[in-house]
Amino acid sequence: MSESSALASDATRVVPSVRASQLAVASLFGALGFGYGTWTSRLPAIKASLGLSTSQVSVVLLSAAIGSVLSFPVTAAALHKLGSRGASVLAGCLLAAGLVALGLAPSWMLACIVMCLYGVIASTMDVAMNAQGVEVERATAVPVMSRLHAVFSLGTMAGAFLASSIVGFTTSVPVHFAVAALVVLAATLLPRAGLVADANAIDGGTRSFALPRGAALLIGAMAFLGMIVEGSMVDWSTLYLKERAAASQQVAPLGIASLQGAMLVTRWFGDRARVRWGARRLLFGGSLLAGLSLAAALLIGGVWPALVGFGLFGIGVATVSPCVYAAGAREGGVALAAVMTLGSLGFLVGPLVIGAVAQATNLSWGMAVVAASAIALAALSRRVRWD
Picture 1 (cartoon, rainbow, N blue to C red):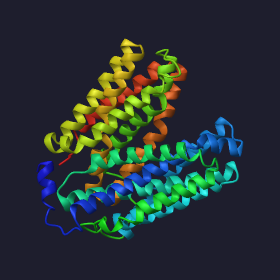
Picture 2 (spheres, rainbow, N blue to C red):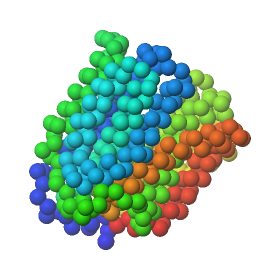
Picture 3 (cartoon, rainbow, N blue to C red):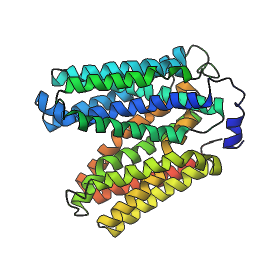
């Protein structure tokens, strides 16, 4: 069955309206991205207000990642009991509360605890809204997953923009995070009537936790590799340009701009590409492009080859997460939770592995691991049943 015909098979489902459903689920993606852009952009202020060292900030970030990895049983239970619609809305409300709590955290230890809980909530919302995105695709027969991930990026940019703007009025982190929490709450609750009910009970039965196996394990392996690739590039691209390509302090951040800009544009048009070519060919070609373009940039060396290579890399990996999460959701809500947990694990360990390789050799070899992972992702994509 083709991608388009699979979507069309659910076209007779009753939904509020195509536009209302798409806007409602997009609002959830934007809300999660907005929260992410909010707290990451104020890390320097949090560090200063709590008197944290750089290593203590790293532990705060690690706490969020640990919470994300440990969220699987909570996420699976929420999906089983509430469905993707209810779990998304509940997680969005808790996310707003988490922002307020983070802004009020009076010590490093409490900040770590709050960030761990925030990681659990954010991961639960991530899984639930992706499952809801698949339900909207099924109900409306219109592919939207790639654009939804683009909206997440737009939400992140909006959160960072608010952080930049609000300091002109107040430098208070609690006040800023309270305002941001209201935005997240509004984006979660106001359009919720457009969300659709799940077509079937989430993983019918009473099971709320299960280790991934079969198709879910294979899709989870792709999520693991995909997040190693994406997370490592975001974390290490600026440092590579500075240390290995001898870029100036003004030019080095353009690596992330090239990567994220290419991903944003590609994701916006990725749904059309998925319908036209299918997920298998899209992921195989995209992952291969990412791996080979990064490898070429590393071999050639220099600033401009790196910037071009990072942009091509972003084009190649942009549709990995939308396609992989959509495939996981088709295996059921609990399967999607398992897939995204493996993805979170990849996001956690990937940058650490790259750092260890770079410490033992140099950062060029560390980035070569990213290129190899992208090529492995291309090979694995041929073994997954996508349609």
